[in-house]
Length: 497
Image 1 (cartoon, rainbow, N blue to C red):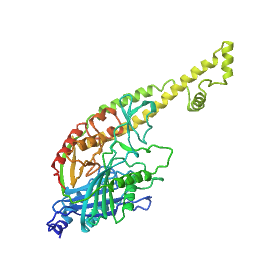
Image 2: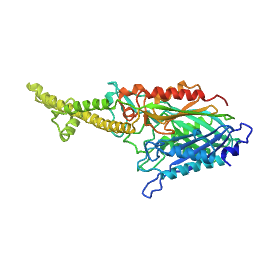
Image 3: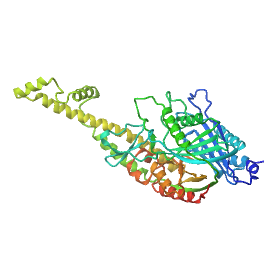
Image 4: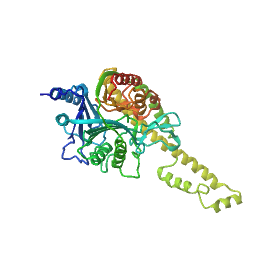
């Protein structure tokens, strides 16, 4: 008897839900694991509609990383065949954790272990009540695309230096909301917490070992605090241009645990204020065609022109680094009398000479030239990175032989808690647009879900030239296509408790 057949005889609309978790970490003997990666499943039904939400500690659902493009269709097919739940009612979200190297068990095991979590969740369902709330956290994340005074943008990355302070004008937008679904047993004991937040998990842990990053540590805080076997499932939000505020710090060890602890505590603070009750479930989805970008050749030509100008500007450099550093320190320590003691300058003035002042003018000229070269070198490093990325994406688009990329947009409502998915690394502005236009009060973006199509930048970001645009496969028109589809899907979700 299928799961659906087993539960179809329920006449009332009482919510039932089950949760389970599987370890999907690689078991390769040379891998160093700090904390395991999981596939966590929530199966929930109101008696007529079934929904499966899966949170996976992976980079993406297909496209890049260890999860293959056939993972999602294979998993959905098995869920549908063995559990009787429609594959279209299965939402699979990547936390987007970024440890190096191979992270997961092999492809077949990924499907098997994730299905096992769903199967166990479906087999152990209990009556539940649900409620929705919104937490707030703005201490741990920053929009990583810095707005520069020249009208461009530059992303905070490890791949190249940050812009100089006098070049930075402003920061991009943030969405500090934590979307929370509280799922309790009828006796009030917590069963599950779904929490949605937007920020790249990049810091990792000391030693660079495999880790679920801050989403995993946040989930640990929630689960350990609540007890009762409660499971915390993290859904990544519109975090395409958001990273941890300490991501580039050279003063502290690379450890995402403090970030996760703060997020977990902020989630719990809001969770305890949520009231639960009965609710209904609704699911809707559609597949759209997002246009691929065609401007990469022109963008490469622009970068090549910039590169040529910067290289030409390196001419007529007198100082070496060996000469520059002590000279720079000497002039920085005593800008008024850098070449010698003040009495030497006074003596020259008294005797009508100016040799030291003339030397200072010449040295300052050479110092400024060397500093300009340092800026040029840093810009050249970024240009080289951007050009390599653009060429790879052009090859990717050319190889596809298609002008568009298929993308699934799925909407799911559990009571007043509403999710709308995107396979793109949606940037903050797009996520805020979708939330603002939604007819539902509590709408949250489940990005990195049900596929992967790389970055999804808003139209206005394309002229900035930041990493998120460079890494984007999509033409600017994608934004209208996606936002319109998200609106249609959200409109199809019925209201109700």
